[in-house]
Image (cartoon, rainbow, N blue to C red; front, side, top):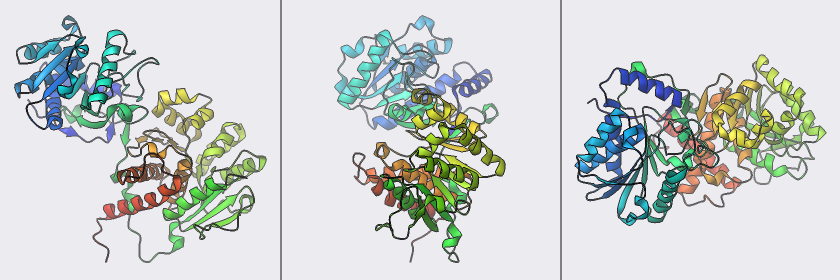
Length: 520
């Protein structure tokens, strides 16, 4: 049997692509090959979680080939000496021929078999690992009836007794394309680890995916390259940002790194533009200006290098412009937004600016027309703002975040950052990146303003808008991860704390990219 390797996580494939690749590969291989490879890969991964013998393992095998994968895994672990209990939640007569052969091998091993009511009778404190092989990527309706109760019990017991749960291919009940639980009344296995087969799936990394999939690894099942398709999306990774992480030259000055103009700050909302401007300055902008819709303060005592003026008096053509933080929706706000859409060569549209665009077809036309002038535009909506722009609801946006981001990018001919767990970055050509960093520490006021400022600072360097957006979101999330790793959060992290962490992460990424040694 050809060895199964653990594939890079970065390439993301749709369920349709996975099925096509699987079908093409299976046609060139002997029966059972892919199922046996999946079981072997899962057994290897399970052993890495079990650490030592003896150990008790619970395997839940459902209908379909996912159940076959689970049964193959079960007999391999039993042959290694683990105490394996299989909870069979399917009619063997309905199994495929390959899955039935896996069942026969499990029957011939030391595996113990139980029915679907086993969880109510078992001693879960003995389990060192549970393996979820109930449903794979083919689930099209909510888990219901007795299997709903099984998943509910498994989630409760794993949380209570703190044993890890390994899902095979995808946590049962989770849509592998969208990251949403299948069906409004559905349920999904809450896994600590997921071993996904053939290629990585976007639904494991966005929406509810990160909450349910846990740590994700990919087993490629040794499928030949000739059967592999081009991925539909990718996870963000540092190699994507190499062009933007070049070391700064000694022979440089503030003019080398561009100007950023943050526009907003209506009455009572000055904090939003200050946070955004401070983030831009800490991410290396040569000069940072703030254009206030309201009367500007004299200066910022925390960062006196920031320069203030009235928004209407600012030069929108000479800087990367970020418009929206604390902008409000007054007639003056609309007027300066129109000016920005017409004049700014590099523009980040955020917050209230997005809401103004959503409500005005004339502003939408100006936004679309920017592409014809070869101007760079980044939109940074959260789901409700995205819904307003598309005349939809936030629930509909969240139901398929990749589709929503692609639709926005195509409609407005811009790069779009659809914020949320597993933020989705899409360009107007349909290319998608899902961000892999971040945590709930970002769920607090002001973090979106900081992201907009990071985007503006990076855009000022004449970088590609899609690359800027992907790096900005990655940095934003990585800063939150670093804070939590150092015991700051996730509860109670403030936006101001995030800014310093973003700067640290940017410099660390720069050092990693350049291979820099110690600084003397």
